[in-house]
Length: 71
Image: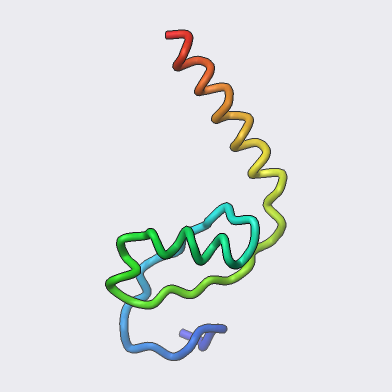
């Protein structure tokens, strides 16, 4: 195993969350509502531009919402 970009830890890392946030303040607001925040620290890092993925996700949600209303 090699060292990575994270601080040394003796604990197990729990996972990763990907948030759709407008900016850092929005990301902090979103993560502060996560129930796991009481169990330990969270680290927020910027990710690659996911604009295309977000637009596709919004398109699918809009389509699913219309389908659900029609049922």
